[in-house]
Amino acid sequence: MFSWSKSNAKKDPELFQDVADGLRRLYRNKLFPLEDTYRFHDFHSPALEDADFDNKPMVLLVGQYSTGKTTFIRHLMEQDFPGMRIGPEPTTDSFIAVMHGDQEGVVPGNALVVDPKKPFRKLNAFGNAFLNRFMCAQLKNPVLESISIIDTPGILSGEKQRISRGYDFAAVLEWFAERVDRIILLFDAHKLDISDEFSEVIKALKNHEDKMRVVLNKADQISTQQLMRVYGALMWSLGKIINTPEVVRVYIGSFWAQPLLVPDNRKLFEAEEQDLFRDIQSLPRNAALRKLNDLIKRARLAKVHAYIITSLKKEMPSVFGKDSKKKELISNLGAIYEKIEKEHNISPGDFPNLKKMQELLAGQDFNKFPALKPKLMESVEDMLANDIAKLMTLVRQEEASMPDQVVKGGAFDGTMNGPFGHGYGEGAGEGIDELEWVVGRDKPSYDEIFYTLSPVNGKVSGAAAKKEMLKSKLPNTVLGKIWTLADVDKDGFLDDEEFALANHLIKVKLEGYELPAKLPAHLVPPSKRGQEQQ
Image (cartoon, rainbow, N blue to C red; front, side, top):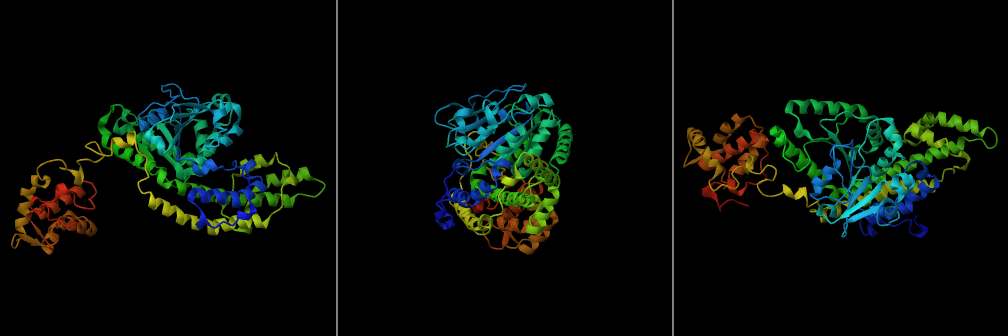
């Protein structure tokens, strides 16, 4: 546990070495004393340690058995990892933290939870039944230099499976969910039924919807019509469980290095994979912001928890009728929530789950609860109102100083460059590696239109070109950008090549592609090459 010092409780954020150092000090000096006093760790979450602030971003994979979780990890890294088992039956029976290490090997759970450099020490509370099913697979892989990945046991249906685990599976996942940067729920397009345990797990992750992404895997094994039905059924099922007005982002694809069985939706799968990869690649850059956000959420919960504990303490009698009063307070906890909400102007969303809190309070001695200590509350209030705002500035400075901090290696490099990059040779990229000017293919038809506009000295005016370009029905903002790109020599007129280029860019946009921010070299008209303005 930390050793606290009163002398440095008012450190100025400007003196922090970096964001991780700032978060660590704020937690130690301002938030932990409140948590410790009101026994926050017995009710909600264990105390944070240094490793929680210093660790790499983590991705948690959750899903029913045989949805492709382990295969997904292997696809990302393009490498097997120690302890990996893949098969149609429930193969992964352990939590496996896949992390970077110079020496390839496996670290068992009991050794892992005593390592101060790893963020897993508090998992010790789940006991040997869990620790015997927990390990760390270490290997040298470029993907793992930026992120760590947590593989989980496949979720099965039936009460028997839940009992036979020997530990609280949903509670372990909730522990991980608090500390990871991304939670990926995997579904198999062939097995869309959501078991009772999976439903319970998703509900346990309810407070972390911002980290949650959904992958509909093995989508290449069904036809387009079936895929539409499966996608609709998945969204309906998730809507019932997650119960929020926002729609969870679902990525559709086949995440393994095998030929597509039904290749009809290849373009869709490629686009979805790139979107998911971009999301994962952004994690290192946004890691500091995520940790800051999680600390704010924790501080708000700790404040509410302190108000609940002190309210219960205040209502307890001094001598007689303590047990009956305790039962009465637990049963009326909802009313106490409402009273605190109005008295301290707190949002209902900041309160802990009512049923869970009632269960936890049943085993507590209310007389041992401390009274309200205003100084502790003021310290946390000051942290939220002032220190966090200053630390936010430091977060932005760190992000700006490390713009290229993205996940590299493995599958992430496979589609970054070359002809197999997503969108290569399509839209504005069409003709990128051809010797002939790609616009020249359709130039004869564009020339016919050009000469009907009565060009003067081989050029048409902006007004004349506008009338023709408006026939595309594209918005003026888009047509204005096309004009800027096509008027290569910036003389306010279009010659026949520039007019052909403008029409080519209109066609690109009408086909659903984005316009380039700057005209690519292969689209510059042959007579203008070397003349275009930078």
